[in-house]
View (cartoon, rainbow, N blue to C red):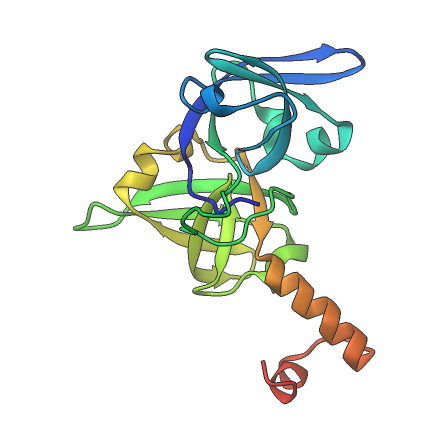
Length: 213
């Protein structure tokens, strides 16, 4: 499990076919020191297993499903990716529950500086099937970053970004149209499943209110 607090930004060294699958190698000067083969790491929000560890890089195998479902299909050598190790049992829980299981990809629309401020507005477009899980003031993982949603208008989502997040992640390198990995709050999905089982039908605001949510 992860929390969406980025620990290091790595650079893609190569994306290549190997042993019948795709391999991804990422520079990782700091976090690689504490890794062992078989350990997990979130790479731009995707939970991957380290299969090749060198002093300053880590290699991963990518299943075809991972390749198709995530933003990895757009990345090329030189691209920056957000890195996070799993949270330790005695660690500080700084973001929200992030599993590293991507629900879909959105489209980066822009990162605009807020007038008379140092902060930014992040604009993305999300798939229609994810809109029911994204609410104002709720949590959303974008490229592995735990963010708070500020505004939702249909399939368009806005989040306020502080300068530190811009400097410490790959957001500053994205261009309009780039795919971004999205993971919605897992609690919302569990609530949906439980409510559907209890009501035997579609979930509505009225039913949620009746059940005490």
